[in-house]
Image (tube, rainbow, N blue to C red):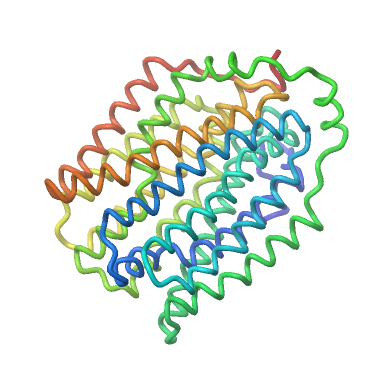
Amino acid sequence: MVNAPVAKGRRRLPALVFTLGWVSFCNDAASEMILPLLPAFLLGMGGTRFDLGLLQGLSELLLSALKIASGWLSDHQHRKKPWLIVGYGLSCAVRPLLCLVLLPWQATLVRSCDRVGKGLRSAPRDALLVDVVAPTDRGAAFGMQRAMDHGGALTGALLAAVLLWVGFEERAIFALAVVPGILVMLLLRQRVHEPEAKRRQVAGKPVVGERAQVARLMPFFLVVLLGAFGSGIDLFLLVRALSLGMPRQALPLLWALLHLVRAGLAAPMGALSDSLSRRRVIACGLGIQAFVMLGFGLVEDAIYLWPLFALHGLHAAFTEGAERGYIADLTGAGRRGTVFGVYYAVQGVAALAAPLCLSAIWDAHGPLLSFGSSAVLQVLAMVLLLLLVPSSRARSDLA
């Protein structure tokens, strides 16, 4: 797979794209050994849906602020690898500590530190990815990165399922997440190198115009904000599965199906956005997600969750690579870290609000109104995307 041409014609994606993909693969394998077990683990120690929303919301609040800061600093320092090492290193170090927690607030603290690490690394990583690929291959590159990311998530979820089946307890599985984390750090230290010529080229240019770049993308960021109310609530989809009687041992398999679809389709959908309008590809993803959210509110039998989780993965495949490619198309080389940071921060704001709103509506009015509200926001995001957001075309740089 790694040696196969991915871009148009005979062009191949640079080796660094695949190296960063393997870093994401190992990191998500560690993360997703834990994540599908976390809702049942938290509820089992006496937590509530509100506690789960608080766990996800507070961690995303930290994530939002740090993504802007790390993106801006990586632009002005013209160095991105140090942010990757610190960000991935922090997550890999604190994530296994979940095996020691005894109270819900302790789980929230560990999860928040994990997300701090993601906040430090995400924007610089995406800016580095853009630095090494041709403008017409941005969707393919981001799609490949997301495919590797979800491939790691699939592997982690399957590992969790196997370990549960052979008798491991949740805390032991959390502790074993340290192993893929070690592989992450080895790959970063030995195989990730910044393109020196590109770094010198950007360093010689004044970094100005961040506000103008962000202002140009404000209608798009509004769409991202609304759309994230349906994509930032994955943990609550697992809670919905538990409420419909899904066995705890089946949750990692359900999670694996989600990432199987994401991993298999993220790269081709990202590449499709290079040749087709990115706006149309994103709109298709939002339409799919509206249907999925409504389905989660309506179903009364756990058997229907399997196709719904698969469709939820299809939404991510349509949107993740295309959204990042759109931002790269409209952002100058010396400002991409900053603008990617704003993009992730917007997602973080939604990820903070969505779980808390979802849990409050669910507790007061039931799952149908809760997930139905999310479906309405997906439709609104799709309409605004088609009415307010202009098309983009790939460019190597912007003044």
